[in-house]
Image: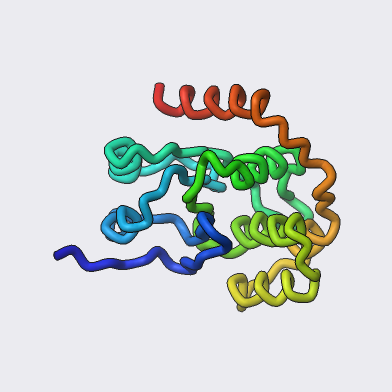
Length: 174
């Protein structure tokens, strides 16, 4: 029997949504048990072949929606790209899904924080969760992004979004 090893910083965010660090080959037996429909990758780098093969064989759609992290003054999370990520995460058609960046801390924490804000959570609770996963290297810029995130910016027109989403998936398989 395969040993079930969750990726680092793994947790359930809400029904059908999980978060973690970058999944590795050693995590495949664990990921298989989740019966994922989608993985939202927040890293802009190329994906390892072994994981791509696993996703394909398991029928998991990979959404390579790489975000630059908030590293003031050099980089920041692009707001339009963040909205794109949020639309995928909020779409029930892609659940269960896993959201990840490299360590499951900053970019993932920012997306989860924005999801929490969309759900109406208090900022104090959102920041407590962010700090739990991002410690000891928290970023004030991530918290500012979460605070300034406006859930009203999300226009969830599934028809137009599904066309954009399928283009992303089709391009990645080429």
